[in-house]
Image (cartoon, rainbow, N blue to C red; front, side, top):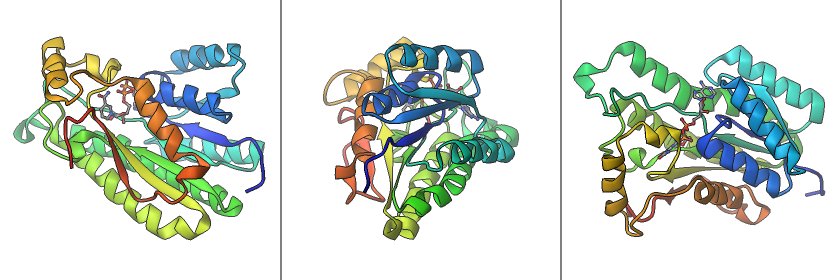
Length: 253
Ligand code: NAI
């Protein structure tokens, strides 16, 4: 592959895991497009990265909105004529007072919303990004699944688990369909990571989680970002269709 600056798009990048991934990929040398719906935070964080001398820009994006996704990726296409790395990180995990909702109590509206953001959002971004990757014969897609897709989760709802399991199946198909175009697709399945999403759950519950892990603590956003960085590297070209658990040994397969 010829040497050029890689262009990376990270969804849900205004905070938490997505922000750490954006920062890490920029430190790896990519020009990172941070996207999110939280426009103020997005702007502030992008500015912070640029102040460190990193290459970053931001675009407002709701991944569940098809025309919004099309516009953002066509802007990237017009500006850079390429998109090398796509990290589908944006996700929601609705809870009531920090507690998962059981199936009987889940509204269709909430079910649809979770699927629309966590699963359809990744499909839309990937579908729009693929032609750019195919034309350059190189691409890396990393989808943010969850431990909730690997085993029963006491903290997240059924809709969330179903959406994340769907993401793993989607990733396998993506890997199989486009591998010969130099494109790899993998999932990360984080355990409990300290972010605003995790803070919705009580500290007591998070401490219980820490005790369940082999390493005796929660994970950091930097540890997830490091795994993404590896999967996006040249050296990871033979890893595709896989799911990498980043969970401190809470669930071992
Ligand atoms: P977070 O809630 O701190 O950040 C998620 C970001 O996604 C927010 O900035 C939010 O504005 C954005 N977002 C939500 N809906 C969006 C939409 N429709 N379009 C664009 N952006 C949208 O969450 P966190 O913890 O950083 O999670 C990131 C990813 O990692 C999510 O997919 C989550 O499901 C996954 N994950 C997180 C774990 C954790 O313990 N924190 C564990 C396992 C998976």
